[in-house]
Length: 109
Ligand SMILES: [Cu+2]
Image (cartoon, rainbow, N blue to C red; front, side, top):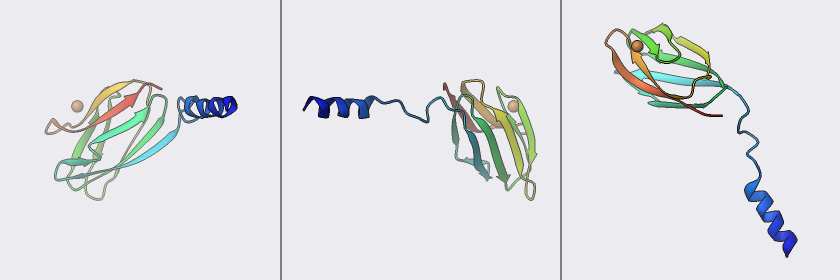
């Protein structure tokens, strides 16, 4: 009986093997009519992130905090690469219109 309870506790409390391990993350992002999908991108601190962005309109993408800029538009995909070393919420903006398209969320690892 005790062994069963201890076994159950171990199962419940064991550390998540994925937590704290930096990963390579490639995330597809699409912009249609000024709407970003997904509207919120979530990664973990330390992840090596590549955002592959397509858009139906020409835009100047700017990821705040990381200060990454790329031009994107029809027939011109953008690739935003960075290591997620800063935690928090960061706006992704079209620099031309200064319109906020979405948010990058970096959770502490
Ligand atoms: Cu900006």
